[in-house]
Image 1: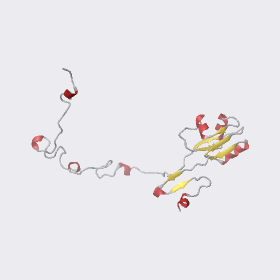
Image 2: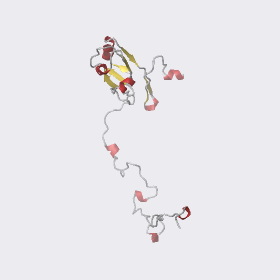
Image 3: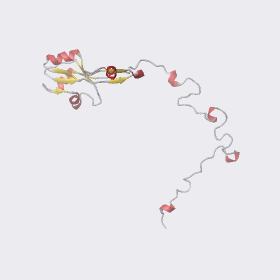
Image 4: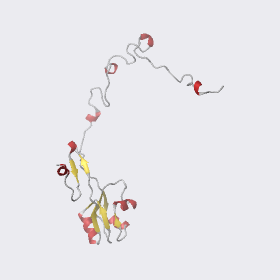
Length: 178
């Protein structure tokens, strides 16, 4: 006779009875119920938080802290105008998408800034989120355009304070609500 669903059973020794702690000395786990003698860990409710070191100053508080992390920082991926001029031909349109397609900018970069190092020998129409003054003048001197892509960067800092890089024509957030 073969095995059926009705006769299925785990192999012998696979199942164990649970230990019933604190059920008298005859059980082998009576009196202290396997918690040892005295101390915080033997008490009911005697739990500690992660990182607790028995009252010693915790490591997280012992390590020196340095510097300042600005919650309002706006990160740009910087690329030089000379590098763009090497890759793109005259009259081509340069956008963040075309820059990432040609491998000049990682796809993960959200904001791009064009810097002025290098020479531009031909006209290029460049669109980016920000330009340095020298990059803008070099592009325009070569007969091209430097168009700023207006973005709205919202960072919420401490106590809900807000900072915007607003689009032209945008009213401030506080004025819109009133």
